[in-house]
Length: 319
Image (cartoon, rainbow, N blue to C red; front, top):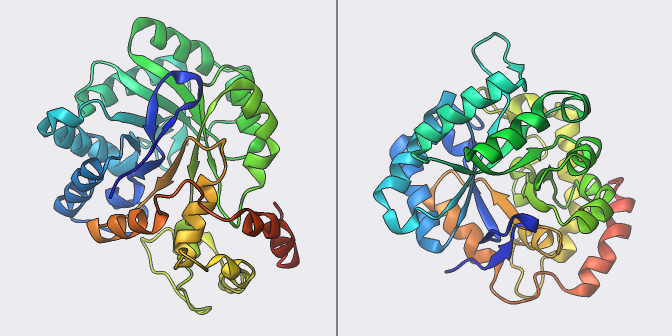
């Protein structure tokens, strides 16, 4: 089992084409995870060859960054792993609020660096800012200053939509992170030209659409708190989305044995994508995803990719 490298845009970094996402491992996304299981999953990802880890200072209230710091400290050969941490969510208030003022950003980056055991963080992403934050706020100046001071090697934006991603690119972001998957490709498609011209690195999150694209849910599937999916879809919305999966099941053929495999391979078929973020909750899930991704140069056949837009349109999915 191995993971192939790709350039992370214009940063000069080369990272694994699969990144380890840690929201689920933190317990915030899908419910409690034993820290020992989370640590084993991270260690196994490093063994397989993952060299990019996606996290946030808000995951577990900083506990996930601290866990990563411990794992990376005990694996000196893996210390060159690129950690991409997201900042900008202030959880000291109820409800949590977004903060991107220069003083707050500097303090949070210093705290993250301490938890991660790093003098300089390789990649910091502003966590779902608005367009105004990027165009008229203090964020860009603050990030450029911290890069100059050596606190940050590279900075970018975890964007909620194409408009924010375009503003990020226009304002100097070196990396953007966007939701991109079989059922939601429109945002990356809308900024594809900007990304190509600028040379920005692209991290694709929600690769499996929070588990939907594993293709294993019944139409009446129910989620319980604290699983975030309990609030993400209404019963009717989830039923519609599960039904729409029929439009892409034709991708499961040849050496693509599952819909889950097709979903990951679809993301990697896009040459703009630097790395696809996966969010396994266990070593078993991690190994399954890597095994099914495949090792050949072609992830999905050209004819399958050509057929996708029409198939998705018939199912009412905009791409």
